[in-house]
Length: 340
Image (cartoon, rainbow, N blue to C red; front, side):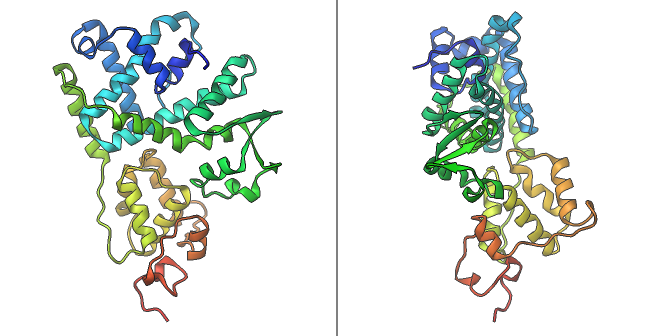
C-alpha cells in the first residue's frame, strides 16, 4: 500500500485513506459547529458546493508549499463538511453536481500524477487509484498508457463519440493505447459515481444551528436547479429515457442531448421551453445550453438547422430503447404517427 502524504489527502479527500487520516486528527462534528475558529471551514465547504452548482471546478493550488501545512485541514475538512451540508440539505441535484465537480477536480491531479515525470511515487499512486477504484490495470508504455480491451469496453460504453469506438483506437496484443488525459477521462463517470455513492451512503448527521442557515440556502439553491418535466405519452422511449436521465440529475451524453434537442425542436417546442429541461444536468450552464440549442435550431453557426437523428444512428449510440410501437419507423419523429 502506498502511504498518503499531505498532497494526496488534499487532492483526493474522498478516498478511504484520507478519511482515516481525518479521524486520527481527533476532531468532532460538534467542534465545527461551535468553534468560531473553525467557521472558515464551514464557509469554505458551502463555497465548494456553490461553485459546483454553477458548473465550476473548485480551484485550489496544492503546489503552494509556503502554506501547505496550514491549509491542509481547511481543504480536507471543507470537503467533509460539504458532505454533511449536502446530507442535511437532501437535494439530489446538488449531490450530483458536487460529485461531478469533485471528479473533474481530481482528474487534473490524477492526470498529472499519472505522468509522474518528476515523482515516480505519484505515478505509482495514480495507478493504484485506477486499480482500487475502477479495477483497471493500467500500464505505462512510452508516452501512452495501456489497459486491457475488456476494461476499456466496460468504461467506454458511456461514450458515444466516434473517437471512443474501439475500431478507432490503437490496439496491440489485447491492450488499448490511451494518452494520460484519455486514461483519466475514461473514468470520470465512475469517479463521479464513486463520490456520489460515498455521499449518499453516509449517515445523515445531527444538525447544529450554525449549519441551518447554509442548509436552508442550499435547499433553495437546489430547488432552483431542479426541474421536473412531465413526459408525454406521445414521446418515443428513447426521448422518454433521455428526459428521465436529466430528471434524475444524471449526465446525458452529447449524442443524447443532440437527439433530445433536435426532437423537441422538431416537435415545435421553442428554445425557451426546452432549455430548462437541462437544468438538472450536473454540468449545466445556462449560457452554453442556450448557445447549443440556438445552433441546433439554425439561429447561429451558418443557419444550418439540425434534424433528429435516425433510429439506426440512435441505436449505434446506445440510446435506443425500442418497444413494439417503434416497429416500422426509421426516425423518432415518426413515433405515434400512422405507420405503413
